Length: 233
Image (cartoon, rainbow, N blue to C red; front, side, top):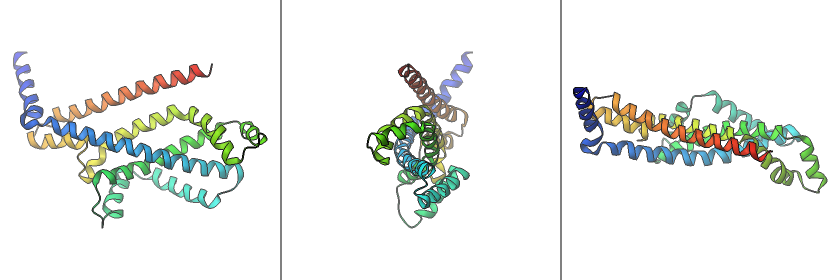
């Protein structure tokens, strides 16, 4: 038992304490959270815009050209791997521009997330009873005002748990950022592995950090769902 503990201690020190290697994980965690946060914001903007365009076309028959463009966007983004999209954004779209890797990752993950957010929000909008729209119009609201003040708040409340789960998935998807040599959390663990030639401990540390973040976020989603259910009573 003592030999095992001594071996564990030596490996721990070699992987995380020597040369302050723990900073690779700490700095990588900061990059991961930064990419996730701003990608979420971009995903929300794109997702709500696409969802409104598509639901408007479904309900009124207007915006057909924009709806067709949105369908192409959804088909392409949802039908291709996020890592391929990341590589195209960085090595093709911005090939001639000296763009910051963090910005490239934010754009790629934001565009990817937007497609999934769009379908989640659209399903929420379409689930609202048509009478809500008619009630708004009878009060003298325009279509846009009815959508903004009556339909969207109810739809957002209905899909909020699903949106939160999508953002948890996005947090984990950012682990492929290392494909463009971005030093995120996963890449930080890989750098330590390259220094110590010990794969087990740094990769377990990365997995544990992701697990802790996901558990806390999932707990937050559960509390949110409980509060939303209680507010409906």
